[in-house]
Structure formats: structure tokens, C-alpha cells
Image (cartoon, rainbow, N blue to C red; front, side, top):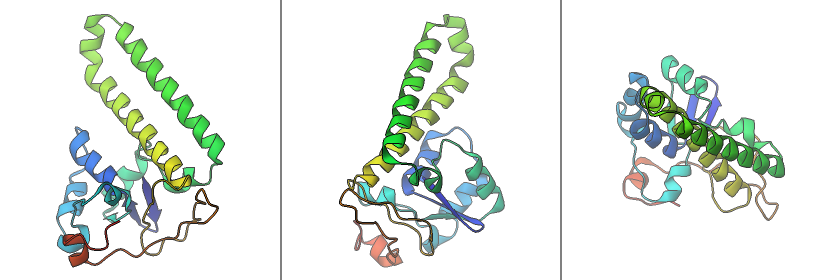
Length: 184
């Protein structure tokens, strides 16, 4: 998921990993910002919970523009306010559309499938990833997953299963992240 604060975009680490390993193309500025600044963008995950941290910061205008144009990267603020039953219904609808699209593509003749495989595969991959992210948001809303928000995030917090709200947490320092201290 992504959150935009001013001229910066914060991504959860899962999105960064997906961009780096799952996409065929993305702006070089994304690589520069993930690996180019040392401490502030040091990227690794100690546990699955680390993937839900909005710690990857993108400031380069080209990166920000590209990330905001990627509809498959869920905008937290857009979906976090959606009532839970509506969000669950949306996910079910997206899953049904995704499965129907795969069935439709598989029903095409072999020549069509070979010619359009890359573009269709990319679309299905991104759709699947969006569905997975929305499932994670549902899990967070039910208190099963904890998101760690960036410092300065002023958006609304999401009620958990108990009715309590999750609050933004301070990012641990470089050495805490390096040696796994303070990781959830």
C-alpha cells in the first residue's frame, strides 16, 4: 500500500519487494531511492510483519508521479475509510472479475494467447496483487495484521476488531532495524 504525505510517497516494504521482483519495468529513480541513500532507505525484512511498515520513502518527482499512477498499488487513504462490509464485497467482486478474465484469456486460441501473454500476464499479476493488498487491509481492520505508519502521518486511524484504533508508530533507528530489535 501507499500513503502520500506532501511531496513524498511512503510504501509498505511488500510493495517495494513486489516492484523490484515482480515488474518488468519501472523508473530507475525507484531503484536509486531504495538503494541509493544508505540508512534512510536501507531495505530488508526480518519477519513478515516488517512488510507492513510504511518505511520506504520516495521523494523524487518521477518516482512519486509513477507510484501515484499505479492503481494496483492500493492507496491506503482511499480504501481505509470504506466500511468493512463494502470493502469485503469489493474484494469478492475483484476476485470474480480476475477469475473470469483468466478463464476468458484461456478460452482464446493459442496464437492469441502467445501474442498477448506478456501484457495480459502483467495485468493479471497486478490485479492479483491489488486483491492481496486489499485482503491485508481487511486483516488489519479485523486486528489480525498491524500496519506501522510513517512519522507525521495525520490520516484517520482504522478501528481494529476490539474497537480500539491503531496509532502510527515511530520507526526504529538504523541499528535497531539492522539487528532486528524493535521489529514486530
